[in-house]
Length: 318
Image 1: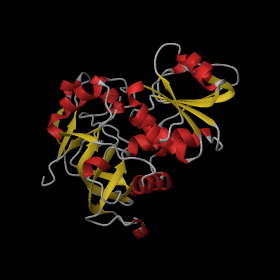
Image 2: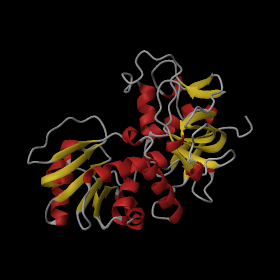
Image 3: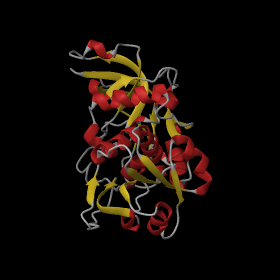
C-alpha cells in the first residue's frame, strides 16, 4: 500500500510516497481503507523534527496523520458488535501515530475503541477534518471541569482547536471570551462566543479592561503563554497544548495536555461524533489535496490564516 511520509526531517518537500506491506486487523482492531486524512499542525511538527524524540530509533518512513475517515475492510476478533463497526461501514478514527503507523496511509489498522461511525451525511473529506481538533478541545475542557457560568478565555479562537473550544464551552454554559482577528467576529458569535477581544499587543490588559476582571481559565490554543496569564484570576487555570514550562504563580494551575492521552476513549469520541451530527459542533469547510500533493498541503498549512480544514484525499479504488 501507499503511505505519505518522510525519511528525513525538513520542509514540506521531504514528504513523498512510500510503499509498505498491507496491514490487517488484529484482535480488537478494525482495518480502515482511508479515503481522507486530516492535516494538522502536529503533522508539520513531526515532519520538521520537533517531535524527533518520539520517533528516535524507528525505521523510516515516518508517517504523519492523527485523524482519518474511510471505510472498514476488516474487523478483528473481539470487536463489540454493538458499535456497528462492520465491513463496509463509513467511519472516522483517531490515530495515535508512531513511526510508519500514521493517518497518511491508504490502509490503517486501528484499535476499534478509537473508531466510530462517521457523522450521517458527512463526506469523507468533511469527516476527516474534525476529530483530532475536537478531541483536543474536549481534553482541555475535561481537565478544567469548569461549572456553568465560569469565564473561559480561548486564544486562537477562530482556528482549528479554538473553534471547537468555543462551541463546546458555549454548549456547556460557559461564558466564552474569544481572542481572534476582528474579521472573525461574525464566525465566533455564530460559534457561541459571548465576548470578543481582538488579538494584538497587551492582550491580557485589554481582556481585563473588557471584562472588568480576570477569567477563570484560559485555553491557550494560540500559544500566548506568559502574555495571557495575567488575565487569569488567582487560583485559576491555563491549558497548555505544547512547548511551555512556565510557572505563572498566584496559585494558577497549569494543565499541560496531550490529546494522545485520549486515544481509545470511545465515550468521548462517540460523543463528539454525535455532537457533529446534531450540530453542536461544526464540520468546517475543507481544502482538499491529493495525497501525492502532501507537500503542497503542508506548504498551505504553514502559510496560516486558514479557516478551512486541510485534508489529503486518497484514491478510493486503490
